[in-house]
Image (tube, rainbow, N blue to C red):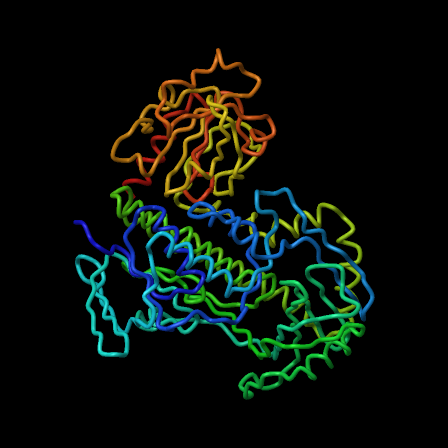
Length: 539
């Protein structure tokens, strides 16, 4: 059955807009609605990490975020105003590095502008008020508050509508968790004076923590916490004088603040639904999980929810997958969500501890640990979310290789490049764009060796691609790269890129549309690639 709209996205924040952009690139008809008439002008989440940029680049040009924002290059930690550690965030891991500091308002604007350029627009002022499952999908009741009363049946409904999600409430899903008994204040201000030579600065003191984020010219975000005995105490936005007092108290004494554009208080909740799916209705982003902002993981986790879900919906719409494929979204992302809630909770407790003994221990560990390159590298990769993996996923196939260099099944595969027979540079993620799984072979023709994997144009060509790679040491005369359809044309790949892939002579890899390794093997086990595709397609 052909529909004008296959997917209704409820909520046009960064998560809903990312899902819309991915579905658009995959050719899936959708509608995105937002009850607010205008985008928020508040900065909110401030960082887009490298993995999110890498995934968004599958459906748009992510360099626009880099050009607009500030690269995250360096962080410093101070104890009572004295520097004790420096973290180098400059990285060659991926095209987009560790990430960029960019107000959420700009992230949303750039995503929406991309959709507008594609003749896809957000229907603002439209609200989802009710829905129900039907045999052919989900029947949704929309209103705009001005007399519009619209009934719409879609195949899938995705709730990207925030912590107070109407979709989650209508499903009756529990949102278990707790409040954290701290009052947090923030200010977006102009700072001048003895500013730290870093993009992020953490001031640890006996009285509490103060954080500074440099996100534009002389614009900084100031964040500080205060213990609170009553978690239900009335909220009170801070004054600029209060912010200045906290800065002086916690070690940032030579810095002056002026021209606040936003002064606010926020409280932390740690909550997560158990399942991200019920029937043909899905939850993503804050509708499914909320937690401490430590490490800037919240918005990025939601964006990656959207990127995980998009290709699975696209394959289902194309007839390439069924219930098990869709269910894997909840299984994979719920595990990630639980890990993020747990990790950010631990970091927040460590940073905000009132125990003098634990404070001294924390500071001593930081002084020593960040002198080691491997600790800095681990911190970079974890913050950038390059280490997020799905090793326990039901979608993973076999890996029959005897060595385990490079990614394992469920791990992120780096976006490597090669040069095709025409001398043009190509990248792995270019092949994945549009929701396609890629079969990479090295010195082995997919057409000859991996029987059952589509290598020519057929009804599955929108979902799969074969890439025949040849070691760059081999000559063009010994490599049969001509006569292949454009989408299956491989090329000559350097040894460094092969090392990143963990790909050796006469081996193959299957990479999922979201850039994770699905299966791997050797020439003697080529049928496993087609078996993975058949299993996932029928799931």
